[in-house]
Image 1: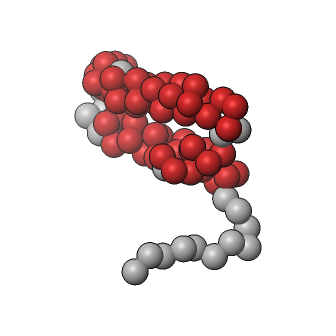
Image 2 (image 1 turned 90 degrees about the vertical axis):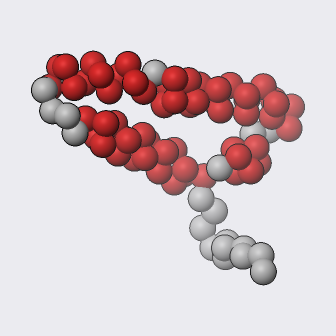
Image 3 (image 1 turned 60 degrees about the vertical axis):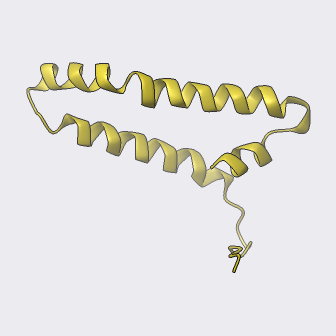
Length: 79
């Protein structure tokens, strides 16, 4: 993820763009997760809400990564 995120940023704004994107994702899905999950459990009464939150985060990550795919490019595997 780190390499892909750095490669899709234009060179002029690579440092600032990467730092902003990575920091926001870490803050939202790392720092606020306990508060969000606790709120969701209290709101719904369902103790399985942490799983739903992780599923949402995974789906958002997949949706964000999908447009960055390069069709026709074979996966590179280092031996």
